[in-house]
Length: 560
Image (cartoon, rainbow, N blue to C red):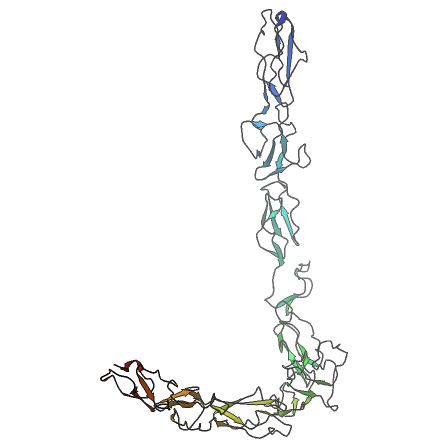
């Protein structure tokens, strides 16, 4: 609660300040001689020795206003043979401590606190139901046949000692101890009969005899006889030979013809009256799986005896019957293995190949009594055409040469194919069409250039040859200056021409002169003369005759 102040009228005092975790008398204000009472909320305590204050005539409280602070629990209480999980000096209200017992002790599950946990109460006191740690107790020691034990205690570290009855001897530790998990350790010993006979032999007769009144031993003399391992049974499809079945005797196993032994062929009777090893079995002679042939099939002829378990490869989705079919065709591109071997001998298989394939190897194979297939594994090889001879100045391409396959011819650059570009392997193992060849690509010689010159880079005119053109003096080239022989056996472009150079059709007339001449092509000549009516002129300045060439400088002519 917060504090509330009231006016100092008639010596009235303000309501006392109420500290955290505390409450005060509910009166709004106090008169002289009136008392305010305080108490702390649960889990808290007053820090003063008084819980009241009185209003005095001078308007003051007679002593300090009490304060409340959180309650604390002190150090955890002691538990015999137990330890708390914390050892602080103070603990807050609500904190929990857990106790664990020392080695050899355990929490009493029937006591007041089987969990071992206590809480700090709001009163500042720990719960009083402290756990109890009691000494570990073991149950009765294990019972050992033909033995007794001494020792009555069953608590931690108590011991029990075993001893064997007469006629038996102890094997192992004779003493066991009660350990902290309430078990006995180590494992108890065992009592085995005393061996009066050598290993592999057993006593026949009484182990004890009594001397009677006549001074003779009662009963017959005991003897040591070899232990017996018992008679063995013949395996299916075989037999066991053993004339003696006692200690160190040997038994030999054999299988009927067509079967082979799987397991130990001999077994020995041991000192423990048991036959060594395990009983073997006679399995049908197996030559291993029949090797499938790609692009072919095999079958078991009807005359071949069949038996349960005769397995032929089956395709996906096939349901196995009690007896497998006697024929299966192989269509996969890779080998398919048998799921189990042929069970009896002899078994014969015949191989055939699909159309377009031929058998390489034996057509028949037999599984013999020696568990081996006769002959070697056959293969179905594709029937193929012979490859053609190499192509001069070219190549041919094909994936394979099986019947129906295609072979394609390609010439090198500068050569043209003459003949069939594509050929097919026919059923008679010949290639269709005719043998092509690669011919050198050439172009016809270009026409000569009138009034000019033709220059060839190669006189054989093969593909790539360049023809260059040049005109005589006084002629200009019209068209392409060069042409190239292409893979179409033709020169590129067209033949150019050499045209004669022509000057302007009418030369300029000079002052006081005239021009004579009507031709203006390369090599033509025009003349300049003085006009007949011109007077006062004495001589020509410049050339009097001009010849037409590639260009004429008429500005050089004048008359004065």
